[in-house]
Length: 350
Image (cartoon, rainbow, N blue to C red; front, side, top):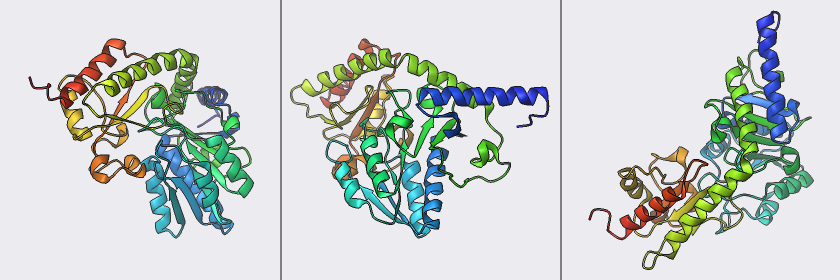
């Protein structure tokens, strides 16, 4: 950004104001904010940067949960092809990764542990603060993909004790194509993109000013409405679950931890019907749901998240994800429940 003229200085001031606002909303310092094009780039920057630091120190072991977003899992696959050792840990049956499993997997050559703060398919929250303390005691870095959590539940980078945290603007009402990686002060990640040295040398390329400003404004608004919205969508989720799980003769299974979760996401395992088939039938009624994670819809095969829970591959295709937002109503929650039950009971085409 050219700061030698008035317009450039004004743009730089707006960018730094956005950096300060974003940092304040997530319990970070402005110097810890690296603007990116979204959560995927932030994840790649964190994993590849930490791997490079680890390799330089003779540490080439990486750990992640088996239910991470594909932005993490596929980056780890690429790093494994480059000679890194990768350990993927399955969660418990409730979708929560036991801290004991991470403690048992840590080695002297572990460079990084990556565990998402909230799973995008199940809505389950992970014990990131406890995992960060474990990693710190063993000399490993901790990255958390908080894309699904930021703006939905309170998130403090300092409070979590993580070394790196990824977030994405569109998840809390901001513009698409904008995100950030929070990187602990003193941790100098090598850049993934090289060029003009923007973002204090951590991410080259012309800054997306409009995206950064819009992201900061959207996050401030989301945080201001968070408590009210969480209560609203939580009530809708509970209402939906109550109706689906109480119907006699229909064996729907609720997935994920019953309390340790995001307020608005509900994930189910359907009896004898794929999530894709249910999705298509509900779409005919104008109801939008997803068969698994929204960003993975359309990919063939069973959900890797459900398989990681120990659900057989054939059944893992029967997952259905319903996500409520602040604009949804009780009437809509009831309509979704009745539509799902109608399909399962064979009443849809009557």
